[in-house]
Amino acid sequence: MLKQFNVVVNGSMTSTSHVDGRTYVGGDLSGGDYVQHLAQTPKSAYAGLTVRGNASGNLHVNGLGAVVGGNANGIIVNNGSTYIGGNASSSNFNGDAWVQGTASSVNFNGKQHAGSYSNVNNINNNKLTAKTAVMNSTLAASTTTSFTNVMNNMSTKLSALKGTAGSAVNFSNNDHQVTFSGKGDAHGVLVFDLTALDSKIFSTNTTDISFNLTNASTVIFNTDNKSLSLTANFNQAQALGSSLIWNFAGASSVTVNRTFGGQVLVADGTFSNQGGANIEGGVYAKSFIQNGEVHLQQFSGSLATAVPEAETSAMMLAGLGLLAFVARRRKSA
Image (cartoon, rainbow, N blue to C red):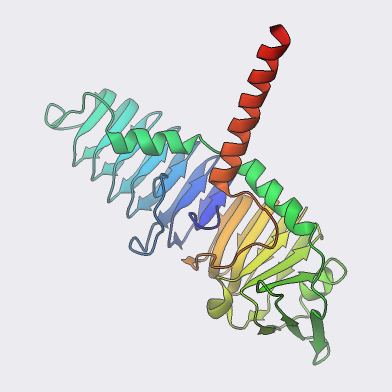
């Protein structure tokens, strides 16, 4: 998950900004620009944008196509193939497109199919008689994995990690300045247990966050507060974004109001970046209110414990299903 996606949201997402890389939304999506940095986006079986629900609101996909399980209204796919499981209206598809329902006021610039057409020109040219191989591949991928299970499993396992010996959080300048210090273990892993300090760190009193990290390629921060908000300056956000994981375990709401660095995991709640606050990393949350850019700082570390990624989790679930089937066969034999 951390390697393939810039943003994964299990529920709904609203956006007034852009995401550099690939995005998955399990519910409805409104607005935003996606796959801004096509060349830097990692390869995957998933489309550039996958939405299991409805997609609407002046939404642009700049590369790798789109899969929308529900209806699409007011979306533009500039590059790649598109599959719409419901109806499409007031939209523009520059690559091959398949609309399962009605296409109304849609501009098709590639090969196309729709269940029916309304106010669409040139529908007799370049018709598709079947979904393309790319469409079938991205459509199959869109339902392969339960990212809810992946996120919850990851958050639970990260929360179980003990803080690294010698790791410290220092407060200075009347508690306005917070500095994280520590040294990675033999594998470059450094864990901060913030469960006793998270409300103090994520407070209006904090104005600056800094880091003094040695030999740490994977840095994990564990919190357990239900609601957290940060307005502080995040120093070294871009430089450290690919190596940090913020595990906001059990949080229902996390808000940042300044640029923030790292992979943000809010498995049970809503993450918001307000006031144009950019994220130098990735967002993985139950829901996401995006009002700042999400820059592609692909996770470059390695987790200290076995945390299943999207494909691994899917294979595990498939394996469990197979074992259950075998058990039933043996019982009935």
